[in-house]
Length: 158
Image (cartoon, rainbow, N blue to C red; front, side):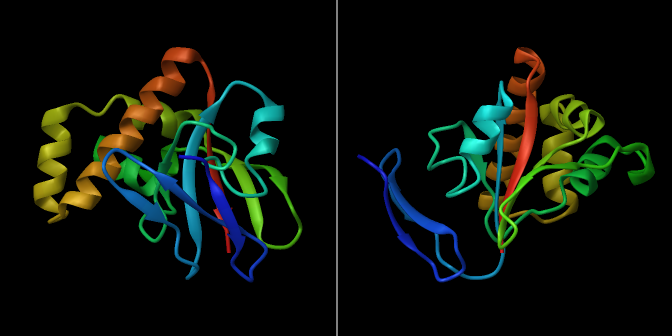
C-alpha cells in the first residue's frame, strides 16, 4: 500500500502505511522519534521532511516511547552513561525536524545485547509487549548497522 501524507500542523508530515496485517498512523502529539540506518548522507537528508518511513528507509518507530538511546544502551550493557559518545546533528530544517547520527559506542552496545539480557531487562523494567518489541527492533537495527558498516540515526520531529 502506498504511503499517504497530511500535515500535522507542526511542519511534519503524518504517514499511514500498511504493515503485516495492520495499518498504523502516526498521531500528532508530542515528539515523534524514529531510528534508522543508511549508507549515505544523501539518504540521511531524504529522511528529514517526513521521517525514514516516508523515505522508504529501514527504521524502528519509537514515537512516544524512546528518545534517549544512550540511556537504554547503558542500562542494557551495564556500562556507565558517560562511556557513550554524544550524538551529532546531521541535518536540521530549522523549525521542527532534525536527524542526528548516534554515537558508534551506542550502536555497538545495542548490537551486542544478547537475548538473555533482553529478557532480564524486560523483567526488571516491567516492560510491556510493545516496549519489548521496540527494544528487540532497535537491537536488530543496530546489528544491521554494524554488519553493513553504516551509521544509525535518530529522526525527531517536535
